Length: 198
Image (cartoon, rainbow, N blue to C red):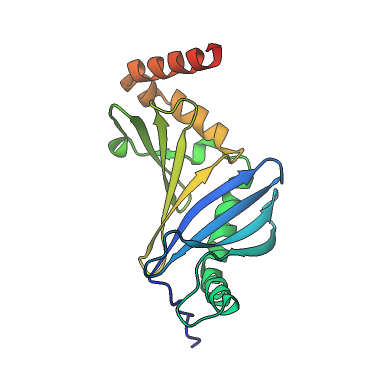
């Protein structure tokens, strides 16, 4: 059995999947930290608007001790390949129109406080938290979580994905959300109108 590549980095995390409107494509970021680095090195998988893989880019700001730029980059890119299939499957899920009947709202995991209304839902094998933020008008946030076969949890922030507009509309118009959080939603709509007029 082939042994999986192990990075020299002390900490690795998937951070971000976003859609770039100018480039008409998706970017999936993986971060690498080691020792006293002030900021992480990054590897980005670039996909076109249909979710087809285009290229891998590495952003190296720090080197491993006694390693060249090329060796550090090779380490990061080799380890990142374990996330490529995950990125492809998540993008494949999100590039197609999302049917609302496939969204399963988890009412017990939905909560509200002074900062946010968090709505939890599942879509296929992913669990998502949709954050409607009161303090940052018009800047909703979506975080996804996947538990893979080895029980490792993978978290990722999803941003500006076109199909998520349908998800937002579905969640905000869901009967349970509409009734239970009527005051909070009305306040959010008022804030949105005020920010457009101001």
